[in-house]
Image (cartoon, rainbow, N blue to C red; front, side, top):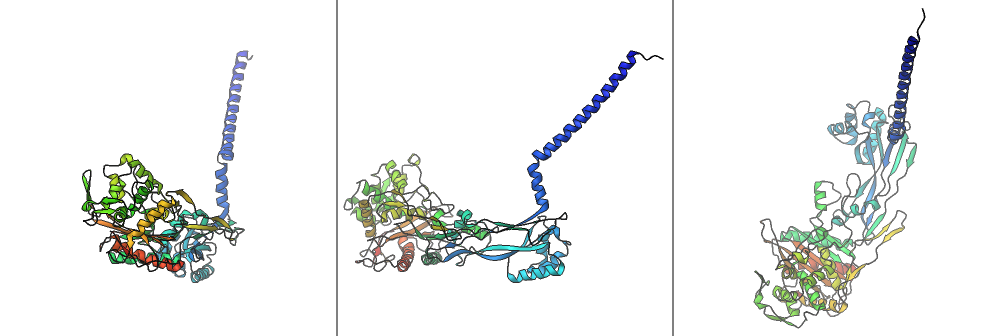
Length: 586
């Protein structure tokens, strides 16, 4: 039989089609293979390398020793103690059910608690973050007896310790269970204090057990830097104990105190009550640590704010010390509101007496001579409405609204310390500008930072933020402040310190109570001494006292206790001609 060309052509086409399909299939398979290789080698490269590392390597962090925090005299306020952490690798336990009963007695923990820990899915679980030597020895004995060498281990751990318990707690803050700063200086300077962690590294076999339990690589940690504070521990201790006493005696909600060197801005004491013990870790610690009243709490200052009204009036030549001001018997109508003096009967007096007697009427009359925008500029110049920049976390800015948001009563209210919010630190800083001759200083609490070798990494130098007053005006304000406290006053001798001339001002401001009404008070006193050459500004603020409320009777005695301790500790020279003093005003 003869095969036609037609049949030959049909067979050829079929063979070519089959060849094409084979080649296409091969090309597709090759493309998929190449694509997969590209995906693995390029797209997933870093992830696969990391997964391989985790499967083959076993790593434990060796925490760095946190740097110490020191007081101005070099004494320890916070330090770290070398201890031992005991951990377990739950997945390496041969019998998770039996392990808790074996380990619990050595750890001095309940079987239930150890059971909960060893049944976690994490590759490493801490049984004791800070284990004393006797527990470590007991665990090591159990490990040897029950062959738990690979599943239970230990490494160095550093526990934060505050030797003075609550002393300066709001300034220091505390560290959390991860040894990280959680409040105060510990939080603000955590990156500086914590140091650089080290690591312990070895290889694991296919069963995820360490090949070399003693470690094939060790990178030692680098200790953190030490921080020196301006806080004087003796003055701080007196300030804290005084606040606690006055809060208890006056049944107050809380209190704050600031002791500052007006010449430099150094804060010698920064106290708030209630306080806490940073060695005790609980929820109350977190809540109390955030209530640093001296820095974070905003309050209406009341009559202490009249200092800045007087300063503005003197500087702008709007009032003079001997100018007669009619206080109208103690009542003044502004817009739809009547302001009253703390006592009735004040008539015509020189401005110096208006200030000394803390007459609301007289001060409002003088303060309203300033144009609203000019008055606002003065308050901003003294630092109100912005943080001081002391460097502590959570510092409040205070409340100072722009003039566009003032009502018809705003300026007259702010003149006497109402309708404005300040922090104790802001007020002490502004008063320091009067005490030092007119310079608004940058307050600070960190004086120096040194590395573990003792090398200075940072040293704070006194910083002038701006000049607020000329020296003559500042001296005039100091004179009227000194006239507030004089031997001829009819009120009790509450703040006087024998041998020292004192300048100061009381403050009694109303605040809204739990009933939603202005039914509570904030009592305060700010003092400058020695008045002849100021070296200290001391402010005391008592929140919502229920037994008495005038600043002269509640805050001034506390001021006196703190100031007496400060002059004694610092050995300040007394004034040559100083008489026992008494306080005028509310």
